[in-house]
Length: 185
Image (tube, rainbow, N blue to C red; front, side):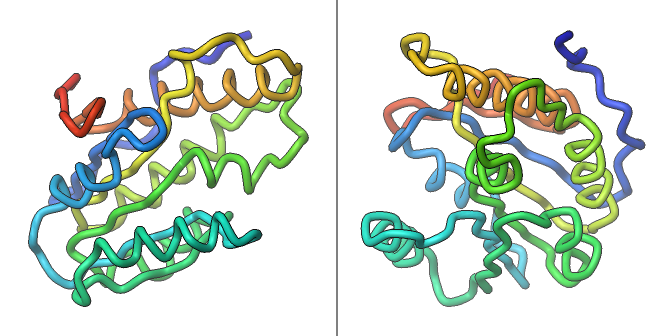
């Protein structure tokens, strides 16, 4: 049964700000997230991607090259809530790129019937304990063809529910297409 887009997450902490930036692959969402993040230092870029092959290593290197030296990079493929609880209060600006890779890292191939709602609530609650402006980047997977494999359809469905849950908790939501941002909330 699909989860409601209403979150059970506690109200936001004074000073915290949660912004969701959605878009397709190579749409410009990472750049839009950096722009939305603002200029308050210290800044953290929380990367969920893992360089498991040469192509992914090259993508990670390209992303790093787009950020100035003032960004501290934290590689956190799975325990985002734990990172926010332990390190999130030390920053004024945090960008997490991206929730889709985080979801893939957390779930792997065990997606049939996966319910990430409690884990997403835990993440949002941990984010709300930080005084930082937090920008989350995620892929919108629902605009393409229906995937032909059962596991790809399950992943698309879980990712869509996660995006809905985060969007319901966010203060602002943006959709990026062809490098152009559209504010949704």
